[in-house]
Image 1: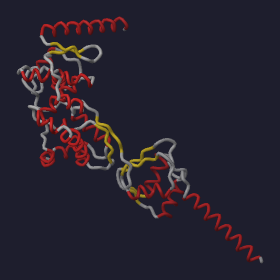
Image 2 (image 1 turned 90 degrees about the vertical axis):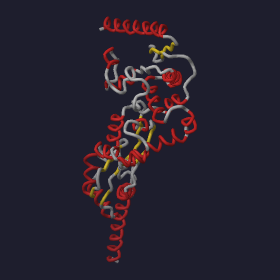
Image 3 (image 1 turned 45 degrees about the vertical axis):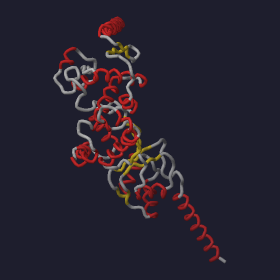
Image 4 (image 1 turned 180 degrees about the vertical axis):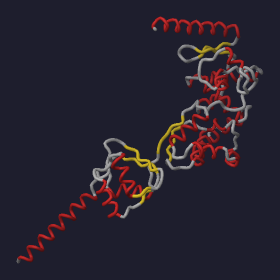
Length: 340
């Protein structure tokens, strides 16, 4: 009878220990975060390295020794590089198996329009695992250029503005491929018929679109601006587009008289026709505007306080509107000085 009691007690202890272990292993909040946390593993890590990251750096576990015990019991020893979200509670097995198999969570980033190429490249290298050197090598690969069918001068026009979901460890070349594929889908395929109809090459369309992008604040004004530049091109006039001068002086600021005289191939106050390449990555609305200019007789425009432009057909009218704009700026400056 005594032996039976000891045996029952033993079974109870075993059951209690097993139950405790089962509960610990299947705790739905074993891996947790007070708020959404992003775990980035730059390279393959061991269990001990992961436990330090989760405990000391992210505070995502209550006991790193229990984490190591659970991982050893479950057979997870090494964990793959990648981006992993901790946005809810996980059991040990659910989370550790995800990292061991490299089942990443994609990251999301948005390329905005009107950006110069270097700024886009810096943005990409800061959001993805690859560095700027790897990105530069991919872009300078002559075979890559041939496959994409564009030149270094026209490349920036192909960085299509959109929101992208990608795996953080994707290579520089594959990341670029996805971006340029989106350009092909949204522009080359969707607008192919109109591109073939206009009296400009695709590269020239992107150049004109980039100037429209740099000039316009409001989308609904882009076709009007496009029509103005088409009118100037058709008449053999200088484009005299301020955004190209900003590009030439490498600064986004108010321009001075001396800036318009800078000797630079992109300065459309000094060089007739379109510049050698796009000055930024134009939006889809700017590309569509370049392909579908509004029909009118405007040749001149001047900025207005609300971000729109005043359009005129003659230089005399343009001078009058310019004088009104200068008066407005001078008045704003006077009021600012009085407040200061």
